[in-house]
Image (tube, rainbow, N blue to C red):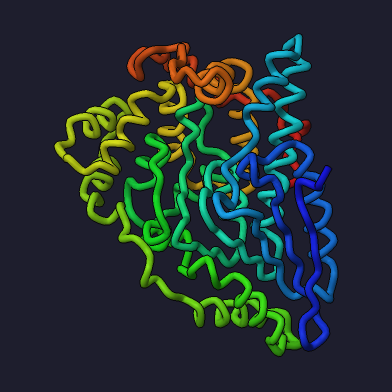
Length: 373
């Protein structure tokens, strides 16, 4: 059986090395299974300390997806088969601790880390993408945080990056609706500076190999930047969807309650297909997920990156054990009946104290699994 993650080292002309990480589960759209995180973590740590390595490229096999997210279907099935609250909590915490440790390491890798954002980039895939220092999107890029459709919430650092988007209200809208955005949307939001056609991936590697890498490693980021900017070409890229709706997003950011936000979205008069499709996801999604996201982008705007991951681990455990995740995954990915029986039918029905409880950590501070971040 072929490995789920492949690692390679590519020698440069001047004697340095470029590390290459390739996600290798094309049939599953590179869904992140539990076995992949230790592999990624171990290799990233090794390359971080290896003076030969001047840069790392994170990519995937196939053409459909960079990574469609975490393997929540397998997680859900293990949870269903596991008996006892403590045993279930261990299953969930082990998965998300391992995932978040990889994401956090990417953010703090310290060397130029290029991610090749081709095809679907969703959920856990976006967590990997956002950890890279140099984020490339191709003409096929489709980016989303669609957790509301399965009863989860935007995690993998989304509490950090959704709150740092330059345009008001966009993070709120994307999290509530799971809207899919394209490469030019990513540029509009500052998620990527590099729009490069998919056919140029080998050219990027060639140009990196031919660089005369500076003796001062602090200069390596600028050298990678120059390579990617030289290949920038958005001539075949679709126009963005977000900018024409910015007035709506700004209006959402001024609302003072989730019910007011939802009312503003539902009464917005627009026949735009992309916008209507996005709104429909919100209307069909988990009301609990909507409440969590609303708090993420209103009450946790100033958390450090480490604190965001710690909060998201608390939420992940509580949501998987006490809220809509098991049912949401069943409806969308297991039985595929698209008829989730959410714990609460409407956003207005969700008790405040229930949502409060989801934000309470299962651990004391000194025993939190991510306390060392």
